Structures are given as C-alpha cells and as structure tokens.
Image 1 (cartoon, protein in one colour):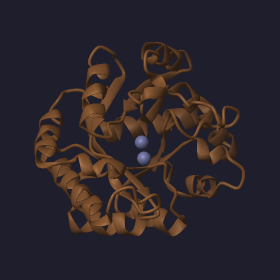
Image 2: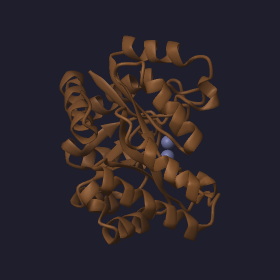
Image 3: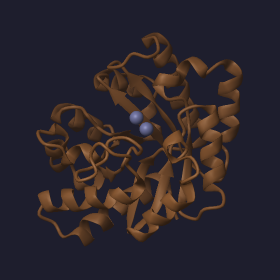
Length: 254
Ligand SMILES: [Zn+2]
Ligand SMILES: [Zn+2]
C-alpha cells in the first residue's frame, strides 16, 4: 500500500543485505521501491536489482556530486540504460549548491543533459536540489523540463518555492526529515496540494524518528506515512492510498 519513491539500495550500506531489506519493506506494506542511480555504476546495479524483483524499479542518472564522472562515453551509456523496461525515471540529477562537490557550471550542464534525455524518453525526472531550488526551476523552464515532469526529492525549499514547483507540475518528495523537530519541510508538506506529495526514505540517509541516526531503509516509509497522516489529521489508509496513487501515476508503476 506504500511506495518508497527514493531509495539507494545499491549504496555500500546495503551490500549483501539487499534481499532482506526488500523483504522487510514488503512486510511493512511497501509495495514498490524506486531504487535511484547516482552514476553509471550505481545505475547499472539498480537495474540489475530491479530485474528479478517485482515492485522494485530503477532510475538512471548522474547525481550532482558525481557529475565529474559524466564524460561523453558515460552519457551515451546512460542513454542506453534509460531504455531498460525497469527504468521509471531519469536521475537523480539536479544541483547541489550546498556541498558544491562539483563545479556549478558542470552541474548545470549535466542537469540540462538529463532534462533533454527525460524529454526524449518520455520518462519523468528525479531531481536533487539543495540550496538551489530557484536555479533548478529556472533551468527546468528554460529546457522545457516541465514537459517531462517529475519529483523534487527530499524537498528542502520554502513555501513559495514549493508553490512554484507545484505550479510547474512537479511532485515533491518528503522523507524522514519531516519527523525531526523544527523541520520546515513538515509545514511545506502539509501546505501543498495532496495530489503532489510523494513519500520517500532517501535511505540509507535521513532515517525518521525513532530510527534517527541509524541506517534508514524502505520499510521505514511506513513511519513517515504514519507521522504525516497524523499531522494531516487523516487516516493512514487514505493517506497511504493517495500518496501511492501519486507515485504510480508519476512513475507509471504497475
Ligand atoms: Zn538527493
Ligand atoms: Zn538520493
């Protein structure tokens, strides 16, 4: 009944534990997991993990931290991966002006490549944006990323930026940070149109309370759903059904 729309099951924290992690997610009521690629190697592994597992899907892309790996050969290889039947989105891509692990002009150039790839393939975008929400949306408008649509995952922008993203047709992903004290993302999540809210863990990072500080995993999307449903004064059942429907519609999940 739930979907984790942003997980990193191919990060080293899950090495050797992938199968058990998927089983625990199913047991917790997580019917689908969107397992996100961050470079060519992780994107390939995400497809390999998705192929034999029903309800596990992959995305392919170069994370803004990893854009220096995106040489011309890598970008061509990424294009080929995008046509795999288990790939449901292009990304994660975007801009990170908070950590700045890669030069901003290069981040922007590779982000534009991903937007064009999304338009060519008809896939939505999975977008990482940290300290760069306005610039991300400027580029989405300039490159007609609006036509591709997608999710701004782990949304950390303010209410006005959320409003702009929703007006552009994008969905916003919310995870464990909504359960943290003084989290601004909680009021943003409760303030936007319910048909644009996606649930995600961003595991292995950002575990929700009461798991905060430990490895996060897709099963915990349940705690995030319970918390948000409670704050929205909505029964868990209908909140879960609606956010799951949002994810199915955006990513074309079966
Ligand atoms: Zn991210
Ligand atoms: Zn991520």
